[in-house]
Image 1: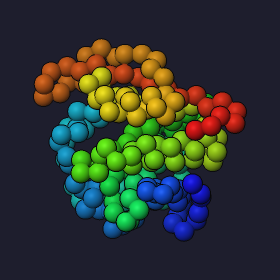
Image 2: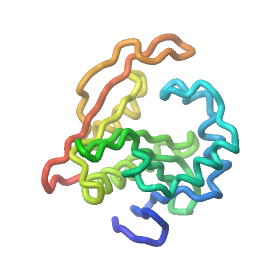
Image 3: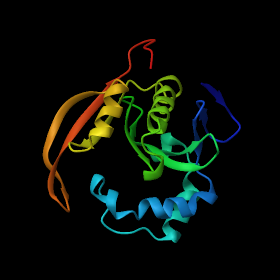
Length: 186
């Protein structure tokens, strides 16, 4: 793994996956991702996004994380195909923490890209942003995501009962947290 400045503001890479900053050419991908109703229940989205709104979002995507308190990076495979997104949200520089969310498009799941992207982002959080901790919320039935975060050093710290209303009924949410310790291996 190495860090490079070939893309701005961030370029993080493994052998099969890399993260890059949002580009104007990501409009169609974001439009598809944000309007995928099958994943709305894991967030707080209940209405579609227009291309106009997403264009405005892309125009402001280069703003500093310290200003907008969030960062979205695009996940690409080694063939430079856009295969997902990984987010930092609720960035709190005073308490040095942020939430993490990740989505990989269905056809690229199960190939290690999510684990690579998460490891890259965790390195960035610890080494560049100097965060003390990160956290995530995962629906209790999403065992692949729970396993992903557990293998990446996250611990379950609580359950929010009947937190999300899905088409199949109420779902519990597992709250997970990763605290960085000095010189801890990721």
